[in-house]
Length: 91
Image: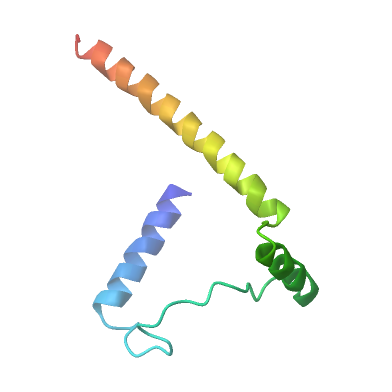
């Protein structure tokens, strides 16, 4: 998967360098991220009501807690890797 991502990033960078993204509609304007066009209209309305009441949809709340857990896991992995490298270097 990483190879595919690197290839995609390289293609995007080449296209940008060649100016293929210049002059696109909406260039330089902020994205409107309030509404997700892929979410059905009735679900968007429910999400809007939740947002206006100070709540978030269940998936958003779950991704927040999942993101925190993933961040903690990454930190532990990095610490473990760092200690392993230090041991190998004789520190």
